[in-house]
Image 1 (cartoon, rainbow, N blue to C red):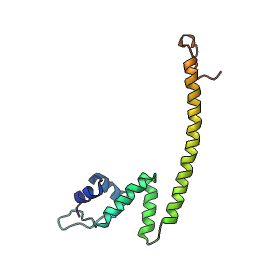
Image 2: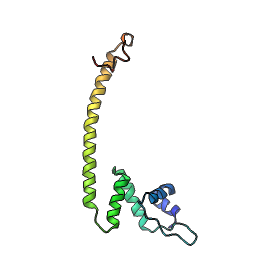
Image 3: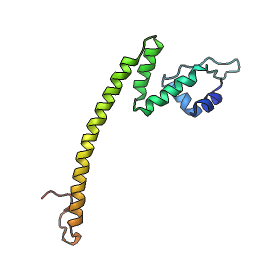
Amino acid sequence: MRIGDLATTSGLSTKTIRFYEQADLLPPPPRTTGGYRDYPAEAVARLGFIRDAQAAGLTLAEIRGILDLRDSGQAPCGHVSGLIAQHLAEIEQRLVELRKTRTALRDLAQRAADTDPATCTDICSILTRT
């Protein structure tokens, strides 16, 4: 199938498909005698996998690693499980940090509400620790 048809079927742009080719996520397809890319039907499923993996927070490098495992005949499920666990741990850590930041911002918002701008002699007394 030509790139326009693949784009329509996959819901991606032709530019994105070419980018995935250049990033070694999608193997270069054979070309027709006229020089057009002729993608196999399996390209639709591969592009769907790439989209779903990105939506799960995986990087293109991680996705490439998964596809390389699959292309070499190995089942990548163990590798994917490890990546998911790693990403989940990172998200949990970021949530802890965000909660701390939220608490600090709430304190600053209260300090701002209690501050009379006319009495502010520092750069900004709201942000200056006393």
